[in-house]
Length: 156
Image (cartoon, rainbow, N blue to C red; front, side, top):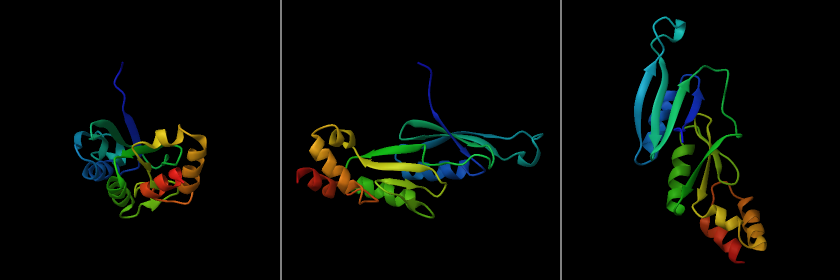
């Protein structure tokens, strides 16, 4: 199968975003940084693309200009082992201008949407429909997800 990766379109913040994301996620790093050629007008010499990995998952940041921006139609989901991991990613990604959203969703300071969820998220909603409804109702009252409260709602 051909290699696949996500390309994230930024105006001029791709390298800053890559540095930020690789500081948040373990086993991450920045690879190749390419620049606009000398004959490309006002962007000559600026970063064009930056390749990076977040815990082994490849991404490319592209400084393509201001015409496209992120919205909630695309998000990156982070499955967390426990509440401490949820807290870590939530706090890091909402820092310095990020925004909390409902039901485990947030936007980072670059406007990219993330879902910070428990690792067994799918199992919670694919078992007993009554349990799933209680967990869903509890989730709808939350911004950052609280695993203990979701488990309590499921057990009720």
